Length: 277
Length: 266
Ligand SMILES: Nc1ncnc2c1ncn2[C@@H]1O[C@H](COP(=O)(O)OP(=O)(O)OP(=O)(O)O)[C@@H](O)[C@H]1O
Ligand SMILES: [Mg+2]
Image (cartoon, chains in turn orange, cyan):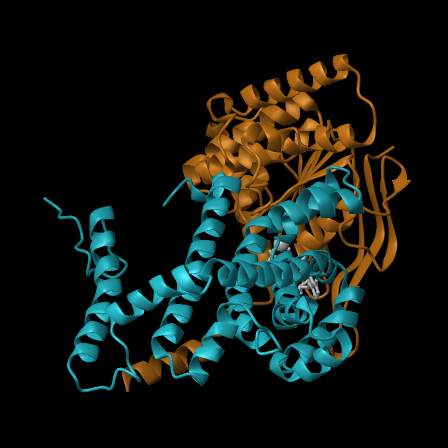
């Protein structure tokens, strides 16, 4: 059974003249423990699809199954990491990470053994993310990269089987991103979540994924699915191998083709002429 | 060696000492000007009493005319009207900012009412609540409540959606999202709104004490006008300003104490 099964999903925003067909007949199965990345021109519906899986947006046709169950709203089995502003600035790092435990705490009686196990897990996640020294800091005292690590640790705290990430490293500099890439691969190996990851960065998409899903806009749809021909164990050097570069070139070319934003030569000529005169 | 930008650079730095120097300048300059103009025989004392006259009036008001109880009753009225409106505005603002149907139902209405002049409600208030303490509290309430609701709703709406959605994907229920995320996240802004509206509550005090009052700072100002006691008007106005300033500072202090994470960098 696929961990996530997307069947003929469509999504229409608005009505009348505001009608936008964000997704049309999208079908995709994602296997347990698979790492799938989504790329495509801006506005092709990547975020919308991810949010539908997360239950934060509802689809207007088709069906989405997570763990064989129809998705009817957000749930702790599908954690999400956002690009920005999702940490709780009023909570210290450790309290942010334990937020899901706090929810549980408020609802049911928890044995002291469970509390201890949770503390143990929070500590383990803190070390895994290299955040030991920051446990008692507030999020706004941390760099962007560290904040995203906290967000990932917080998402992992409840042992979600599915982890959804929407451009989580989009705001980070190149060096920090590389570190985060290896970190997320490590997390994937250790915790074995099924990972759906949206990005603008094709290199990132290939480096991380088992499969890269390329989407096309107007209406948003899946264009091509690429199997990544790299060994399961990734290393930064692989980014320079011929097969990596070939795939990167191929995907970039296809994104350009599907984006519909061809460079208009006539327009350029006219601009040049105006500039010259 | 690169030099530190001067204080006149755009958004340039200002040391603590420099800050206090400029603050003192800003406060003392008008005082000096006032003293100069009032002592220059250009203006009649009836229109512009000097600082010394005002200070003397402050002392006699305190010694002979029971200034303390005037301040006490005014502070009580402002605080009661303000607290009442805060207690009702807070849950309403939270609901308007969180649930769209509540917003649709209450926001246009509130917007409409807030443009009605609070002063014009005085005759109605007298008719409905009488002329007891409650009428003065009611007017301060009317003056602050509607603004407060709208500002609080806006504070709540400003909570980043990602914070709420993160909680939902961690399994938070609707109530938990409101209690543990939306409210917590909006708290600093809400306290700021309280601070700002507290200022407005004070401006409505004088209006409120128009209504058959026989005590209070606002009432004393109005009565002083009838007897051309300009110096007493000055004392009243300055005292209201001073009390407002103190309350403002208390709110700021509470903000720093309650939300340490917002004051880590400055
Ligand atoms: N809440 C909404 N209301 C109306 N239209 C929306 C909404 N959210 C998204 N859309 C539209 O749906 C389409 C897909 O948007 P989406 O955000 O999923 O694209 P994306 O692939 O994530 O783009 P980007 O790479 O820029 O993040 C766009 O045309 C967008 O304008
Ligand atoms: Mg997006």
